[in-house]
Image (cartoon, rainbow, N blue to C red; front, side, top):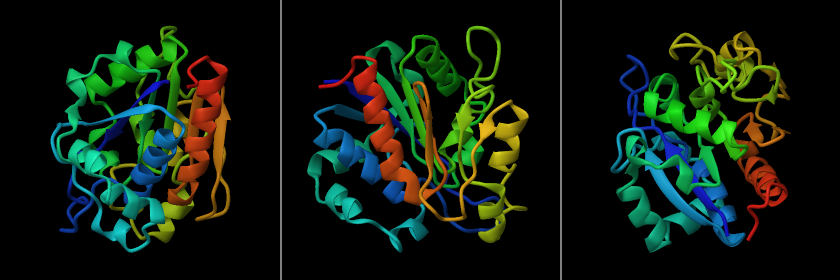
Length: 230
């Protein structure tokens, strides 16, 4: 059995729009349920700890796994009292997963504790996954050789086209695809809204909410190959 850490955003406001944001429900619930069904232990963390904010809009398109998550008292209790990422021991986990939601664009990049966690996970060959805006947490993270974690690796995330279609290209602090390319990522963009994920060794990234199950599946595949399968 592997131990997987899911790290959520603690940021609740969408720029200066006055709108609420946070994590995206299906991007949390689908992988959480898939990891559990595969026999792995899952812990929840967030940047600040405690109850992280959810993007209310994400309930409008919620998948069945969201209802299953909300009906699971263990999952609900874990979500109400997430670990602060600064308190997490990187050595305790075989994999880390970053769900998206627009909140991640503000508080994941540049967070020292998260960057340290991801850098150590990468350097020790453990599995890292992220979906939609979650790959924002990979930005600025350096490998032991001083290069960005995404440099020279096939990656994906919420595309500039999708951000423009959402009407938020001028609201978010940066465009994720553009930044991942600037850090040397070999960015793979599929059609807007279509499921699309890519695995490069132990790094798994997905484009949008519809890619959540693909990312989880590829993470499980990577875990099995590095000897972390149940």
